[in-house]
Length: 310
Image (cartoon, rainbow, N blue to C red; front, side):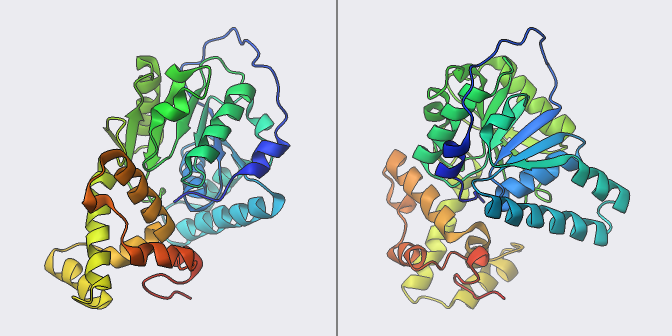
């Protein structure tokens, strides 16, 4: 889900005054994506394949090169599988540019933040974006899984233009996107976000109130935590738990495999956020989950979680 983007972008950004732009831009043509990890790269790919000009930011040149490689490989695989033609693949790659400086986001119509699920890091990024994005009607969006959108909105001077646009992993394949307006989000921002996600990107949108977990994670996270507790207590093996849900309930992927795919650090972060907000025991992360995160066994992206991966 989020990439590990933090202080580097904040150090290298060229702060500039927010210039007034006289023309009104109703549509979205230029998109910025902050973070090029698993989720950021997927969001950038979706936007580029949909004909939008996409600028992707990462903390360092090394992180940016890893993200660029991730995008190139993903588009190449899509072409190999016949999901798009070689010409479409090349066109999407031409629409992608990369930077380590958030100051380059000045002309963006829409910026989607997709970094680590950490409130402080996200808040600082939104404060910087508020300074450098010069278009007066630009939408500032977060791909957060659980952090209250209003906290990010009030960190800016334009809280009416901040909204949650929550994609699911892998973003190029998953059809659903949650739209989460904050209490401060303006109706025009909601309409424009709904249009670009639904009509331009071709995703199915659902709206959620600004409550930790929104719709999908509010249902999904307790299910994943329950499976982890079952495994932790020795009630069943990891294979039997996953096979039980795959073969008994026709789920495409068992809960422990799914937790590995999402990233155990992300599962833990969302659980912590939901527990902080609601104080419900079913949202509390099991000790095993936290120990695995502490050990760096984060799932697929780390090569090991509940299962091992090559």
